[in-house]
Image (cartoon, rainbow, N blue to C red; front, side):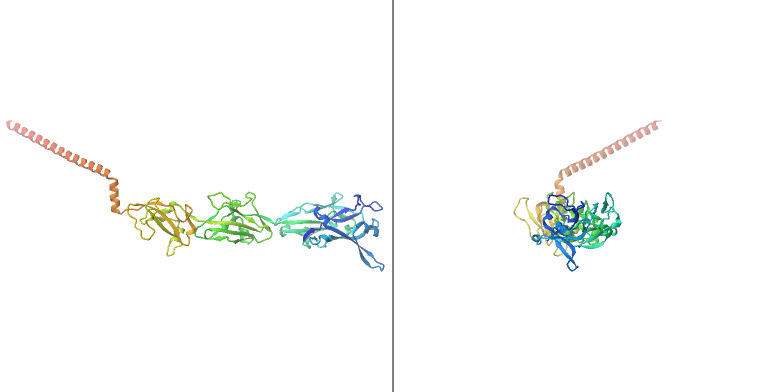
Length: 482
């Protein structure tokens, strides 16, 4: 049933024309009525109860549906005030859908003295809520009468939860209160009850759940051979989720659930659950839809996190994408065709019998040929020939890898089979023969120059020797004549 909450207020009794009903001394009748929202006013009726003496002198209760009738039959006025009880009830035709909810534990009833001239005590509410864990210092309510502070010795203010008194408001540590709805009950002391009336006797007070910004998932995980946790991909305000909410995670307030940790490529659903009812997930103000792109290379909004109706569970659709083998990770230098040159962690998957990652070469004679030259083990590449090869992945982890075309089969790549040492020499000579001819010619010319130079030096030496001998002979002749 839908609740109709009890909050009493004071009103002046009026006739059908809206005029105040007064006693013989001109004093109006002040009575109590529920302070209800407009949509609830037609749901409630009142029963007015007064205790009287029967013919035997015993106390009996007499019930009325009209307060004016009670006043008239019992002579209630300022010279003859009476203690009465007002009982609020749901009308009989609405009882299956609504019920009275009285957080004060009084069952929708209130007792007061009718007919006594009363001074109104005004209750001014300063605050009606605080966030869980916070300890406000301002007063919840201030009581005044005739524009002066009402004597605190003439009233008490008590905090209630589900009808149970938790203590005087002045002794309550608001920071330790669990999230939820409370009732603040204001009661006049017996000394004040016959002279004063409160304009409101209860206040609904709420301890609001502490809002935690739901993490945002902006990227997908990429296969790396290890288990990937969604918690490693989440951020809060641009910072790592595990850093921002470390305290809540360690204390078990936030618990990961669903497919939150996985190794292989695929789509998964994970949850972050708040196990403490004092907290609630809220969507980020700056990233209101919590949308995220599942591939870094696209800006498409694939999905959004959903927050449960009570705010305790944030649900994420997330994805682990394949590791992309790019062209620079394919070696073309070996004698046996193309080879994979993956990161160390990935290469370990290619090792051993029944390797988790395997690959097969398909060899073609040209880039457009539809006829395979190979496919079987032991294909012999002819030295110096050019081939076109595509690689196909296999093994248990094949689906966790793709080539840069997005599939497990690469585009054809040109491969030049390396030659033997002798073949390399011949090839080198064949490619550079003109330089060898030029070099040989230069060498022969150098040798010829050296020979000519030597011959020239020899003839010169012989001539000088002959000239020296001739001079010696001339000198010898001169000496004989003398």
